[in-house]
Amino acid sequence: MSIRLSERVPVKYLFEEGKLGNEYVVAGWVDAVRIHGGVVFVILRDRSGKIQIVAKKNVARSAWENAKELSVESVIAVRGELVSSKAALGGRELLAKELVVLSRADPLPIDIKDYEKTVLAKRLDWRYLDLRNPRNLTIFLIEAEMARAAREWFYSHDFVEIFTSKIVGAATEGGAEVFSIVYFDKPAFLAQSPQLYKQLGVIAGFEKVFEIGPAFRAEPHHTTRHLTEYTSLDLEMGFIDSYEDVMNVVEDLIKYMVSKAIAKYKSEIEEYFPNAIADLPKKVPRITIREAYKLLEQAGMKVEWGEDLGTEAERKLGEIIEKEYGSPLVFVVEYPWRVRPFYTMRKPDEPEWTLSFDLLFRGLEIATGGQREHRYEVLKRQLEEKGLNPKNFEWYLNMFRYGAPPHGGAGIGLERVVMQALGLPNIREARLLPRDPERLVP
Ligand code: AMO
Image (cartoon, rainbow, N blue to C red):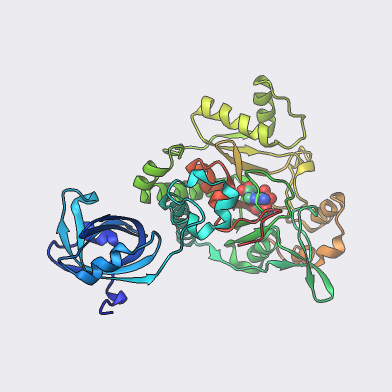
């Protein structure tokens, strides 16, 4: 083969910068083939777009012969002349001089063009084929852009990126949802969150830290919002006056991530995601959970004082806030102590409420955070109050004996942000290889 793949240009380049009359090499997947006697039309697709390839018997016989035998989703490389064409999408096509098959595809087990014909579970079984559909692939380009933007935000605000252990000795977020693992002769778990280690980062002297990494939850329920493994975007910052400082950071960060991604993929979002968010509010409203109880009660939904907001309550509250404040985002603050983890700081004057918050996006919790208890004696009492054994947290408790600044932070579920920003019906769509109680492959 005289085609050199290293000379390949992205399809998009041919439309934006390619010169008519010049020869180019492109390579990608066969999206469609039409045979008209001595002419074969092939639509070639790469990550950047699609272009029509024309293989003519009387121009390049061997290219034409290869083209008429093509199966869809085969991988090919083409060297050809860029010519203008009234009939082709984008007004340009490539007149093949050479066309080689790099990998021949068998008939496909799922319909990748009309992806909705296949149930999600089966699409996920064939995930690498499912992602050949540009709409599905775009979800992950958007997710990557959000993660990139988040990193950019953190670095430009002096946060230090840390990488913490995912094999841990004790549960951080309560015991029920933790995966036990076999670790030589010791009990061990998969980390539910980097909570204790991001606090360690602050106390060690980094002052402001962040991590983007996996979190594991032994979540037995089948819902459209829960995964057993998700990507957690965590931050922790020292020397705060209050949890308001953390909310300001989360608000700025979320707006930055989402707006960067929707700006970069504007045309794809318009084409593929009719329920995507159009724009974000200037200021995210903040209400106490007590106000939330009242608003919900007025709307006919009773949540007992001191209870957490369930799925339905969150959804309803999202609707109310959208209507009253015109905002898809809302911070709910001062959650009850009884539903918050031991490390949360409580309100000094009303200890049944905490200095913590959740951020709801279109009626779904996407982030949790708050100020942490940094006073050794109080923290120890809180651990005991939650029925945890201080022995298991000895190393953690000790941190607060040797100089721990007031601090706070938050954890954001990346898949939930993507799901809500694009208006996806199921969180599994926003996870490359989702894990749930049934799914372990691929
Ligand atoms: P929390 O347990 O609320 O808080 O989790 C933080 C955020 O992580 C996401 N999330 C999930 N996403 C998908 N599937 C799940 N099973 C799942 N569980 C949680 C949600 C949630 O808002 N340590 C605290 C955070 C902190 O205070 O800094 C924590 O983990 O978006």
